[in-house]
Amino acid sequence: MFSTRVRMVALLAAFSAVAAQAQISDGVVRIGVLGDMSGPYSDAGGAGAVVAARMAVEDFQAGGASDFRIEIVSADHQSKADVGSAIARQWYDVDGVDAIADLTNSAVALAVNEIARAKGKAVLATSPATSALTGKACSPTTIQWTSDTWMLTHAIGDAVVRSGGDSWFFLSVDYTFGHELERQTGEVVQRSGGRVLGSVRHPLNTQDFSSFLLQAQASKAKIIGLASSGADTINAIKQGADFGIRRGGQQFAGLMTLITDVHALGLESAQGLLLAEPFYWDLNEGTRAWSERFASLHRGRKPTMNQAGVYAGVLHYLKAVRAAGSDDGRKAIDKMKELPTDDPLFGPGTIRQDGRKIHPVYLFEVKKPAESKYPWDYYKLRATVPAEKAFRPISEGGCPLVQ
Image 1 (spheres, rainbow, N blue to C red):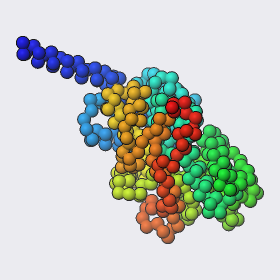
Image 2 (image 1 turned 45 degrees about the horizontal axis):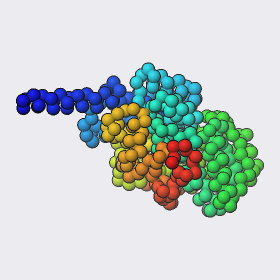
Image 3 (image 1 turned 120 degrees about the horizontal axis):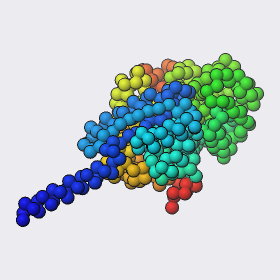
Image 4 (image 1 turned 90 degrees about the vertical axis):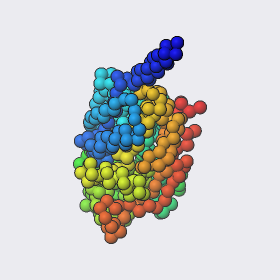
């Protein structure tokens, strides 16, 4: 009698283990890093985003046993929504990918967001900046991690106007990201008492900013707001020096400037720029230790906030899958929202009902060359925006998930 009962308990335990394992599709959690691997934003994410995702897997596995394998795959969306959509469908439908991370480029991110919503698959939007992902386009299977246009525009626009930069002209990259950044910054500038004198839009990854810079000069605006990122921001500032932008009394404001942009420009050109980021490699002991490890795996380069976001987002996703016992997109994202976040790069935080990850944001100023003491020592901290004030209030986004 006793042995029969023991066997029944053992069988039930085995059945429960099999049932739990069955919740992980094919016993493998596959994460696709879909980003710009060869274009203007490849320094911001690219191969470094893949390195960050693999570091997250390594740290997750070191933090405790799990009963599933993890695979990382990657692809280049070429900053084209149709290319990114085709890859996402192939990954979700054929290749068994459970979650897609990175998604540098807002147009690609919005397209993949809709595909994932229809298929019940997870999206870890750790790099796109469009605020629509936590607004009217919010999805129960999408998390937005690092930054967004609301945060960027409010952290920079208001501060620059208050410091005297009260007239603006925008050079904006001509797609969703640039349009949003220009519109939202303009609204902040005007609410803060400044004026918007005009704008011009340029193609993604253009090599010649001559006509655009001439229009900006002619506006006589004190601030030329660069609603762009990556190579576009770098080229505009470099060519602006040839046109005498700074000598003429005008100043660039990089609305989405990353540390790799500053590195490419050099401190002589970038000094004095104000920028807002939720991550800087040299912020504290935790960020420095992780960043040194990242640099040893990525050609000595320090991480951008986007690459840091990939690490933190993937790590939290894996913790959620383990806690939920499932890689189902809706269940995993629900568990990500339920669990508090905590990692060495962003510290403790939360994920709201609309999918927005909440953490502090820092206003930095790029150092003068004489102020930099060692390689990649580029920023000095000007202000800290607390987490509860750094992002758009949940009641103002229009997300249909918000009760």
